[in-house]
Length: 126
Image 1: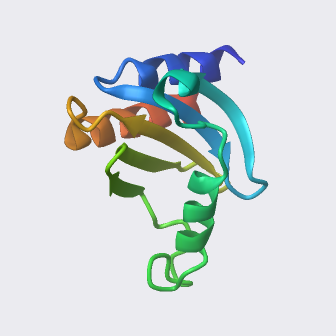
Image 2 (image 1 turned 180 degrees about the vertical axis):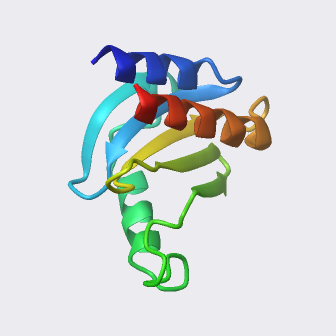
Image 3 (image 1 turned 135 degrees about the vertical axis):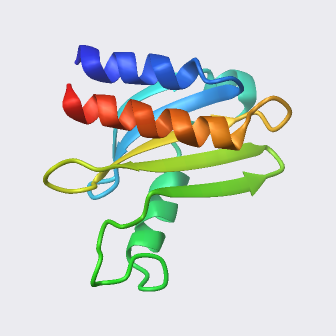
């Protein structure tokens, strides 16, 4: 799908982006991926991001039952970079998640989160 390819191209254009995925967190499927995992030593298709999302979505502390799908972003700071997961809210649900791994030395979390919101909105409107 050209919209998804364009979406990932825009995510990878974010300064410091090392890899990106569009994930269906309900099924655990990677819809599309971009980046160079071999170069970074990080497997972009690893199940880690899906498990993080499932844990947060399944926890009343993060996603209260009265407001399911209220999660917007999950940010993880690790020695190997920043991991940002953005929930793409569609009219039907919030099962899609944009995931990007950023280089800590050049990535900017605020700009990345702002960019992911805009990219997510454009993906839904396409």
